[in-house]
Image 1 (cartoon, rainbow, N blue to C red):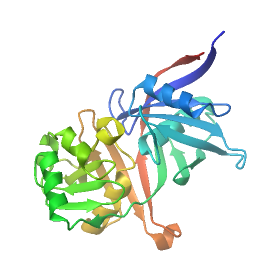
Image 2 (image 1 turned 30 degrees about the vertical axis):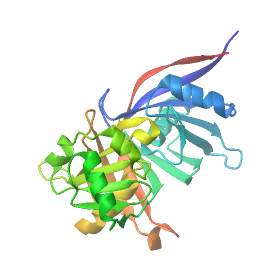
Image 3 (image 1 turned 90 degrees about the vertical axis):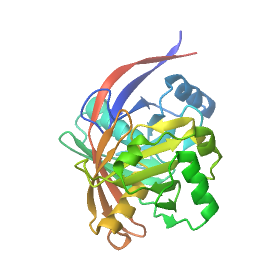
Image 4 (image 1 turned 120 degrees about the horizontal axis):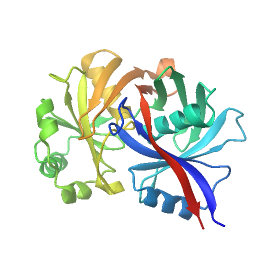
Length: 277
């Protein structure tokens, strides 16, 4: 008799089905072998599959992990939102907040009606002065950026949202860049938002991620500083597209490190059972 695990597929950072970024969410009673978790993520074949288990150190908390089809990652915003949505909407529908224990520290998510607010660590970028790397990034992306910055990922800044929308990267060249992924961004002129972005990560088996919460941990502080205000609206202009609100809380107010608070909605598009041997 096979073991069964329930799962949910949730579109995050969108209010419409088949928009935003899909993530699989698998609640567990106890951790399975890491190799099996990775096999499940490969079988789901989405940009991220999230697994969570109740955290015994915290009555109201859960240990959360994220896996792409090929590897485990340190932080994933959209799968965190998807996990909070599945937990608060379907697993424990009376719940209105949750603490997730993760490889990136404790992440809090609060629900306010249909909105979910994620509290994530900021990733402050520094300007890249290496001209060879700037040229290589422009060559890989298909257009030279106005600026290149680096945090966990490279971030290429353009002057025009239409340029970002039209980019057609050479993913072999993106894969050769010394980074886990490349964020591209521009002011949101004509988009009714403060800034737009896209995210490419063939290094993790994802040529283009539809909506990337973790990228906004770098985008938020950059645009807050550039625009001179901490509260922003954002759109990731992938084919599926997604909308976010972004609020940057500086280190003095947030604690030892700055934080980024992302807001968005989510939609359940599938649920079922996994059959394990």
